[in-house]
Length: 351
Image (tube, rainbow, N blue to C red):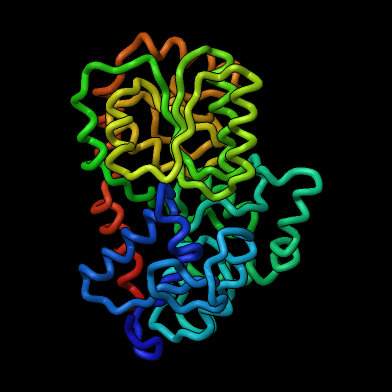
């Protein structure tokens, strides 16, 4: 790791080490690290808690998978130790750093936007620090460059911080790896859902979908919340859902699974984008995504749903049609190299 006194780019990579498996955010981190290495630019990852494997500038001396939103604010403590030419903030929150160096933020929709959220009722108190800190975040947002990961996110960023709608760069996807599953013709009447096993991913929607339709489903994700996994398993037993949950599965095994399924179901309403959607499209699966999501911006419009009832009807219909060529063609525009080229165009201005 380069000296924090001479580094060119300080990369805010909240949750580094936890979010790298089945995580769109983790994919963004790793792709940007590769981009900086390729360009010969010195950089240092910055996180609040100590990563399990990767070196970083951090404050907490151990890994902390909980309190995700709080860490996005507290990472400022770690970042303040670094004086780079520019901060590349991949954690999405415009924490005040522009007094130290130029600040470029790549962001999804803020947690306190009007988009659907898991934080309802008393759980909304979890986001109280964001509301209290909002004036400082708004000031920083007005001074810096923000890039959104979808048009849905761009609108939410504008709404929360009171700034013009930012430019959009869709996240990177390892299209070539998932294309290995594309040529498989013999597929089962089955759907796959991919997402971290944590409450915010709304995986219960996949369980309910299987229960309503009788169609077999598989949920794949990194295990973050064990109590939530137990809730999902209990729901599956109670509803008679024909669903299996696999966690911490190697990516190669995920690709093999995708070669056997016909449909990818995305359960997260209000999701900023959803990299697994594009991965599945590359593998030849027909995506079924919430209308209220960033992924709906890139799929054929008939592949959106607003309610689980509507998703149930469409899932049954999609088992009878073949859209693999059409969706595979769309996925080709989301390669890691395309993302790196666009991101470098913005970052290089500060170097």
